[in-house]
Image (cartoon, rainbow, N blue to C red; front, side, top):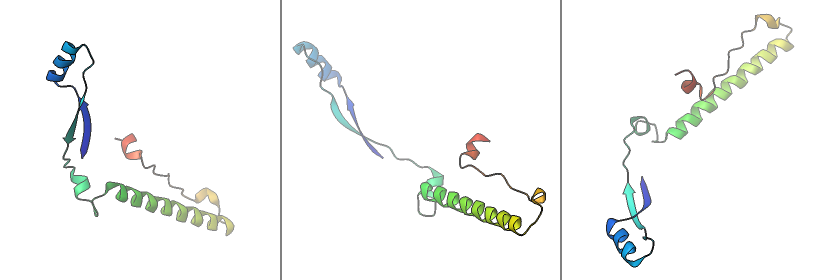
Amino acid sequence: MSLYDLRYTHAEAARAARAGRRPAPTKTLRRITSWQPRVLDGRDGSLAVEIATAEGRTRLQGRLGAQRIRGLHHAGHDMDDVDIPSVRHRHGGLWHA
């Protein structure tokens, strides 16, 4: 990752003090290399794609479960015996950690 930053050098601060003006910042480039194993071990290198895929799969399972329950209701089954699993929120891992 590359990030530009503005910094004041000691020499520029001294020149500005002698001239009676504000120092001018110098543009510096900072480079950061991130070695996050989860991102590197991903199928295509993108953690966001894996999260979106897992979230879509969970939504699909929820829709299929709702269709099954609706079908049981229309067929006249007793709805007191139907098990409705709780929905797993995508931030649930952080909440339960």
